[in-house]
Length: 438
Image (cartoon, helix red, strand yellow):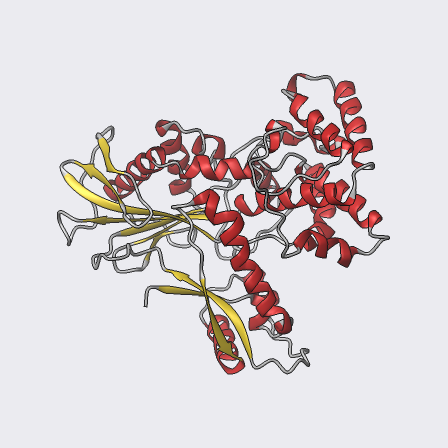
């Protein structure tokens, strides 16, 4: 009870079961060495558990019959029994269910937010046909693609019409409480797949499929409380710092990936293995030579071309004020430098890009429980009510806020912060081409 089991979809479908132990052990290593030191106390290192194949088959059947797998994702859950390895078990990870605050029996509200990328693209090697990235956030671009039916996301359903969401991740990550509250209000109005609320019974009270179950006072309280908590804690600044490791953009990542494949004599699997290698090359000291990657956890290799490319990134600013000819010149210069990168330099850049990609895809789960009135589900509030933070969250202790004289404890945790594989780069160029249709 109070635990969440994480099993790879590939293991549930038995399509890649022989590699489950290596994957999970790398996943734990990645969280422990890369994520946890930079996101604590907001991230934890999971435990592991062995599951028999019969247990895996049972989980697969339960997942299919639960009705919780969106229509557009069901093809990925089809069972494949093509594994011939004599595997007796798979390894899965176990973490806490952060919807309830550890040590407290009373459960209040719990809210999951997927904040997405909180920065504007600032890379000089954005494809000339994709320069809308300099004018719109990644989230806004995705919303425009959905609105024009250019892309479909796995969470979308045929029974619910998807309207564009006005959520602004730049406001959410701004560090300014009113802008955080405004961004949250947009998510409450149109949650899509980016906000979900559970009530004290553990039932979903607000999501893209369940609307209008929150009364106005409840929504106002949650909106203001969350803004107060997220403004007081430094979870968003920690997360943004890791997101900003994307200094080459997806377009640049494709160029660097192609360069690495070339250096591996055309062997994609070898290139991807080098990037995904368990040897994480963790830096012994913070990397301070170049501001754009000062927060990188990875050891920077010696490579003149890498130094030149990072200098180009550092010197690149305000692309919206530049003429197209100037942007063309900077792009071609930077792309030429990519073609001179060494193998370790390519691996370094791609590891940072994939880490940023993972941090742009995490969830933030906030549990909020009343302690003065155990049976309460909310606190009556009015617009502009003064909330104050009484205690920040510690390593093992919850935070505390006060609203209208009533005290609430809270917990903030980052979830779904596992690594992204280099194999995603194989189809990334095609994915980025969708932008050209805007």
